[in-house]
Length: 385
Ligand SMILES: Cc1ncc(COP(=O)(O)O)c(C=O)c1O
Image (cartoon, rainbow, N blue to C red):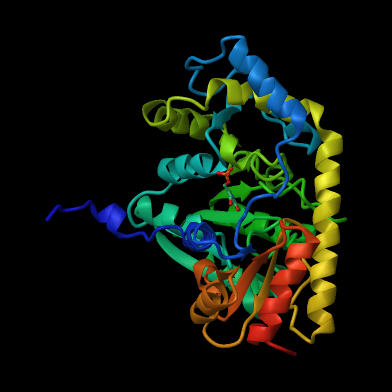
């Protein structure tokens, strides 16, 4: 028997990816599966990005780049961040193969064995795994009782954060709830982080996908620039999930340490993909606006249909493309029944630290959302008011 490292035994495979592979298997067997489990836009990557990637390949941009990324992309990222009031020098940015790798590098750089990591639940699945891989211990603040809002849960957050806290992860708009936290809530986060000298990850991967309310960037708040690592990626905003492109931006000392990990692991993000990333940041504003408008229409449609049917919708999300809903019975069993019997893939809330709920992704056409809902209503899947 092979013995495995304790760090890898501490984590489970990604629950969200597991559900979509069941969906893919059923589809391969000929089933008409509606997939509301995936965290990826159903749109193709906008043409100017594809063209820039092809042109870069043809122009010979196929070798390694500097570990931190090509200068033109780091400059374009710094310019983009400046529009949000974030003053990062290109030297404070590392371009990574996906936002996930950026987050992984931050956890590995900041969290040591036994360090405490605070998550706001429901939280995106991989934060827990990354904390555990780094040897961290978790403190979880439950936002389900406040219908996913942060402000009513600030007392709980105040109790959770102490001088023992090494890292706090804030993700707004949130996956899986779609919540955009208020300025007041983020100001309270700032006070706690400064008082207890906590490092904060601000995962802003859904920041451009909002419907009327945009969250503040934590690093713009007083006292936060030198303790915040801002993480972002191209997957969601630009429909570039398979290209694998993201970045982290932060204080020079953290970035210099994380750069060592990047150079000894992935070396760099793919060269021509980085060139396509420049086009994403400079050339496709209209295409992004169209996708965001489509997501907003689908959100409204999904919520109208759920409310018409008497299903309980705890909160209307202001961003991302997910809705968390309470389900009948045990969420793991209910989601399993939904995929096996109704061929509708949804993600159990337990994967995000929210048992009793499920996450529906509305990155799908309204026709397919309707089809999924018809099948789920027949199953008695949703909890009612
Ligand atoms: C909250 C959040 N952060 C980061 C990521 C990482 O995305 P990627 O690695 O595709 O950039 C995801 C993807 O699902 C996410 O939902």
